[in-house]
Image (tube, rainbow, N blue to C red; front, side):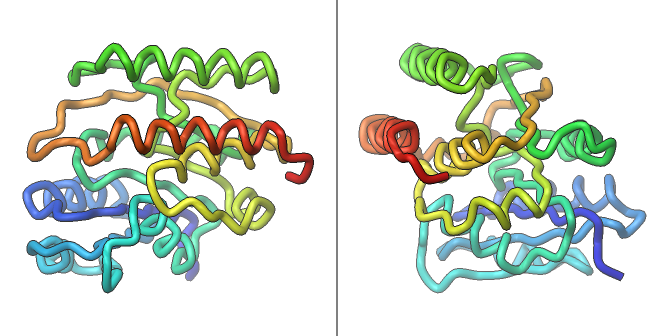
Length: 231
């Protein structure tokens, strides 16, 4: 039977977190109505091997590192669920809180749900430049489209499959993917909601976001979609 929910986990060199993260998700959805897809985005460590240790997990591997958006797209193209969830492989989000994302969709109140760290509990310090950038993006989205999204770059989200069918293709393969996904969802008139989530400190490693390069790209993508007439 086709699963109702597909959970896509992009992972690049996350051997220290991936097993426990998948185990937590698997235990949360042990009723079997969710499919769990791990996308190893060209890792050079044991991410794939450890992800495959839990039975029933679909593990995909990109031959080379495509980037954050590229990894998610690999998983989306394989997903069978009516609801698609994304959660990063760095274990900064709680598997049990996936239910917070999918409930508004299951009730058919919303089409796209974003996990917002600013509205929940945050145990990882947010640098001032990120807070400023997120505030600016929040203001622009509210001014232009009348929606209040405090965490536009959240990798913890859920969406109906029909959203993806409408907004495809997506072209951003790096970290600006989140902005492209959000902008196209907004412009197509889908119902969007933020829910409070717990945002934990990364247990291993550090963020791979290049603040200057990726930040400029994110801003460029936002402005481009504001100016574009087509949806």
